[in-house]
Length: 277
Image (cartoon, rainbow, N blue to C red; front, side):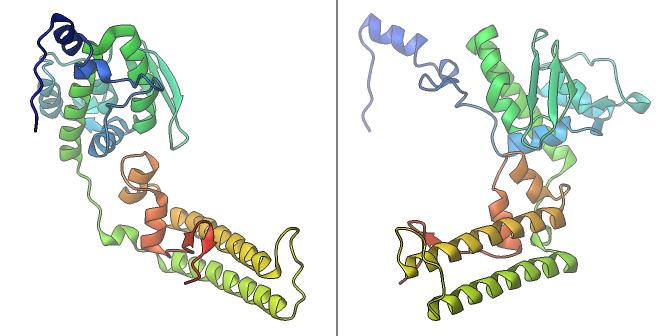
């Protein structure tokens, strides 16, 4: 690997002022954050700032000490406990204001540097929060915030605990019966289409052959089946399921992964068509 040395003053100035990591937090192409909390950081932030998350005095002190804060705020929970929202607010500049709808459809409200409502997840951190902080306070403050919030999020996740097992992808008998009902309906509908195709009674779509019409209708049925199964799986697993939570908040994976592990892989396509060979 080659080692490049900046020899001219211009090159050294570019490396010192333009190539620094903290000055590349926002993409010059689209203006959005490209260096941001991801995966475990997002999971930790969500559970850390979720309603009902409280820490003892010793836990709160340890979390704040990780980010070089040595003074505890006034406790806001029962028996002298500290909410995750309160501890997260200690990292925000006092003039931070934000109102955004999360991936879960909940409202996240930050007013005068205090997290008032909602649980912080990927949409909040990668969107207006980091972008506004970068514009209002500069790269140095934003860099310190990212370093602090990710460190605190990981430590909080260790305290609260988060794990995923095969059991988290196992449907209840009621859920499995619902999936079977949906797929059985799909089989009947496709069998009916094939019968119409063989009997030449299938209505041909404009600009398509009879075979292409059949393939298009089958693709529509299988796509709709995957959507219906997805809704059934999401309801059955529930929003307290770790795998569903991580998919919903944008931490890791997607609901499609959960559907494929819990119920069915669904129709696979090549160039928007069923695999023919």
